[in-house]
Length: 122
Image (cartoon, rainbow, N blue to C red; front, side):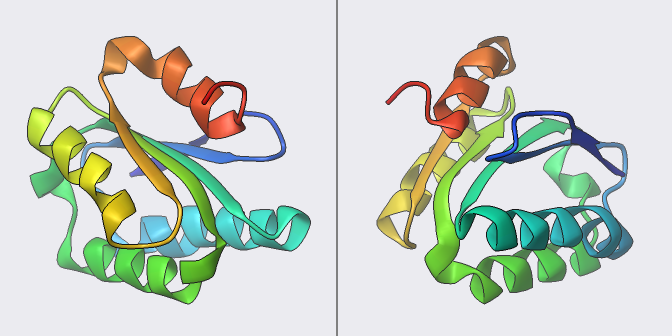
């Protein structure tokens, strides 16, 4: 499941817990991202992984990919907060593939990640 985290108006932030499904993306993530794009014309996104990446269903991965492609030119900053080094490395490399900046952070650096996504630090 994915829960939205209350933040400033220029970002959307979520926490992933237990199993993450297609419905989580359809009912929580996509509407919040679409609302943000309408308000700011860009996406500043933060995701805290409090579950293993293996707990994302195939439907969740598909919805995630579709959301990313649908808004390809709108990505500004995206951070993934996890204690898995491989996910952090993968996230850091994403900036070389698609528009926008992507960074991985350790959970202990949650506030730094949030400030970066909000645009408060570079």
